[in-house]
Length: 116
Length: 110
Image 1: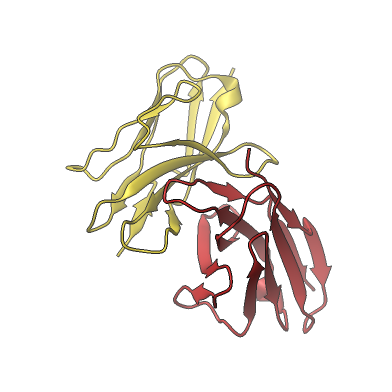
Image 2: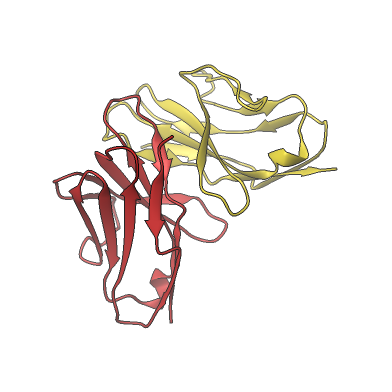
């Protein structure tokens, strides 16, 4: 079945640095990638939607200059948290969707970001 | 506005008891509803969706447009059903994004 590989699974970084999270679709072409953020014991909050080769569409309240999303190929999307601060500490999850309206969503295993 | 509400954060039942995880939604068009499950230390995975009208692992869910609900049911809970369950909605007029409810932790006690 469809698999999405998300790396790293955990990352600790210092305040002010940038962190890049990668999501790769291993056996299908991810035409659309969704990036979510999940706070402890809370739901997944959609941050942005990106289509391959296009600029990402950000949800209201999400800073596009802080959370840079790149979806340059059909198998790779990246989320870069720039100038990270402790309040950016969270669990980030990607979800990929292939072509066709009935194509399902495949989730990555998530990245635990801790900013110290 | 699109919204998915799961009123229960935690549902605790004994093995063999019936289970109903509640989900209500708000959407002006024709939504597509899903249930996702997340077992401990595993990634989110699809359990079922309303257009398939299927039963997976004994779970079923019926879309009730009048009550705007998509409750997840299972007649006899098993310990291995213990997990986090998320109800999700995909609208017909957007880019295919999924909006998730807050999630319900199902705890099945022996």
